[in-house]
Image (cartoon, rainbow, N blue to C red; front, side):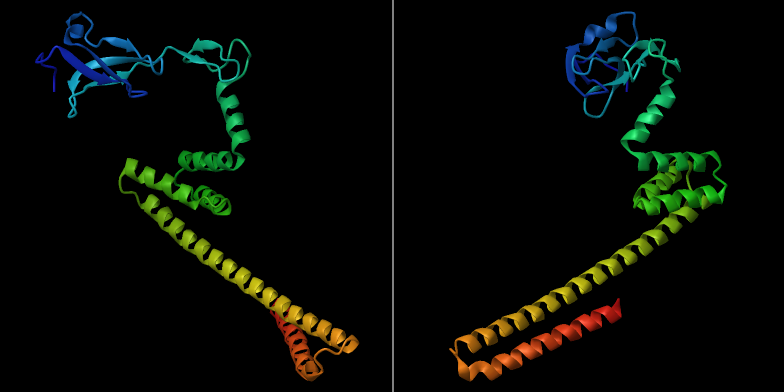
Length: 246
């Protein structure tokens, strides 16, 4: 709704950093329909509108700057410039190289997504994108991309098709991970049991040797021999079974 001068003070926030400001309502008395302010917090320029929102704050909007800063040498140049007049770089190519350097996997995925958007009816582009996302464990990222596209375009058969494919791939990925974890746990458990049996066997063998040198517990010799033989037998059996499984 439009402003009504019911109070001498008005409040508004910077649209970029949301810093809260207060000023007098007569700011609208000037000829300028949307007075501009330079934010003290983020140093950006924004315009104050005459629309009051539900929180009692007047709405603001950003002002597009006519200049941009070179990402390499910070030289100030026109907003539409494609090449920096100071260091000579091409802005778009330089930004792509920086993205590729910071996150090669994400850069590669974004390149394939751009190919998908360029020719959305090409199934091979979609499959290449999904396969790479699955390889990089980024299927959730792919799902978000298609879901955002569906929200923008509305219901679309192709979006629904590839969203279902992503769900299937996620399920397959989850099952494969579970099987891998179970195999790892099983192998670890077998290895641990082998070490336990071997340890008991070696302890029993050491006791037999010690008892032979210094007969301390002659009545327990038979029991120690039985435990030692049983431990080594279980160790050999476990090792053989593990090798057959592998």
